[in-house]
Image (cartoon, rainbow, N blue to C red; front, top):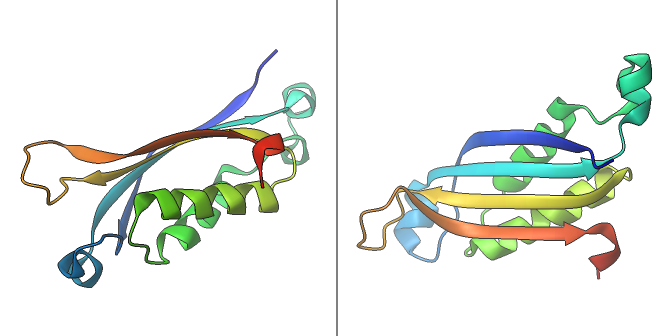
Length: 123
């Protein structure tokens, strides 16, 4: 059985970007997470100790989003490293990091990156 914790459409206002105006003014970003972990114990006991707190995951992502990066690729890498470090029961993470309404001269709702990493792939 595969088990996942989902956090969808997390909204952040942050200062990521290459353009100086992006880092000064900031922009809105959306994060989606699909976190692979075994929460069999929580299914059987209804105890928080058998899973990972959604609030704790959110707070870790929020802290990483508050640290400016030029590239979304870099911000994503930091988020992945942090989640694997802070939550040892995570075995895989699917992450989407989207800059809403990016300043690139195109009409689109967002642009960003998507990554899937398993714990064994960490360098």
